[in-house]
Each structure stands twice: as C-alpha cells, then as structure tokens.
Length: 187
Image 1 (spheres, one colour):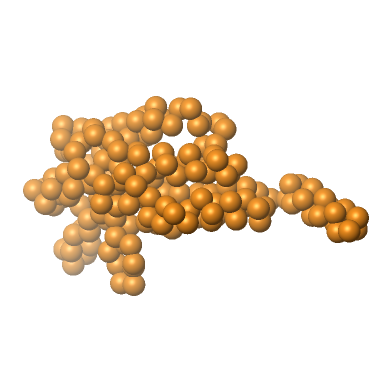
Image 2 (cartoon, helix red, strand yellow):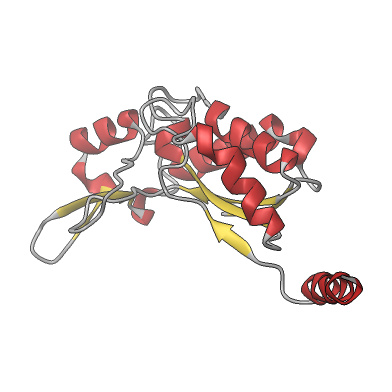
C-alpha cells in the first residue's frame, strides 16, 4: 500500500513537470441554434471531472461567431460558453478559447455545420464580392473575404470592426474568468 501511494505521488509530480495537455471540445459543444445551451450537458460535468482526474490541464473550445452573434449585429449571446467556462472552473480545468470567425462544416463528410452569422450571409447574398471566389467563379461563404476588411459592408461596420467588437464583448463578458480559468484566447 505504501509503495502504490509513493508511485502515485511520483506520477502526479512527474505529470506536473511535463507539457500541459488541453483537450479540444467537440465543435458543437454549444448549441448552434441559439448559443444558449450546451449539448450533452448532463454528461459534461462528469466528462470534465474525468479529464481532470486523468491529468489534463484544460480544454480548448471554438467560440463561433455564427453562434454568438448569429441573429443580429451587435447582439452577443455567450450564455452557452459561460456555462461551459463555469463547469470547467468547477472541475478545476483551464480554458483556451479560439475565436472562430469562419464557417464550420459544409464540406463533404462534415457532421457539424455552423454558418457565419445570418445577417452576414444576407449581406454576402446582396453583394457576392464579400465572399471568396475561385477561378471557376464559385463563391465560398466560409469566411468574409479579406478584400473587404476595411470596407463598412456589414451593417455599417467593417469586418475588422465586427471581429474587434466581438472580441471586446467576449473580454467584457468573461472578465471575471480571465487569467484564472480562461487563460488563453486565440484569434
């Protein structure tokens, strides 16, 4: 019994001196219909606790523009992400958030589909030059074209301003978690 406790102590200290591991959450962790809930919420707390007990440092999650600001310009719904960050905190896990300003899915074999915000797609329908175009003339709605980054084409805002506003709203909404639970934001 003493040997196993000592071995467990070595394993724990060896783990802490190694490379921290972050596990990517499923792309559809937050409900895509409204951003206000979590998919598989009933099992999420158990799964996060299991990750922590296996030595995982934290989780990584995509924060989808199409989920958070999906319905109306400037209206941000971080509720589902807040629930996830709170659950991660309760499980003593760190969170890395990836700001995702592109479409998820829509390609062959993809099982998750998270489009750009509805109002952005409507603008792209009106002016297809906002979308990328391939050499055959096909339009891609996966991302707003970089060619219009400085043009106020999205409800009077530039795409860069939209991304900036989104990230500021994220910062303000999650201020209490920054540096403690929420330790890394990738844009």
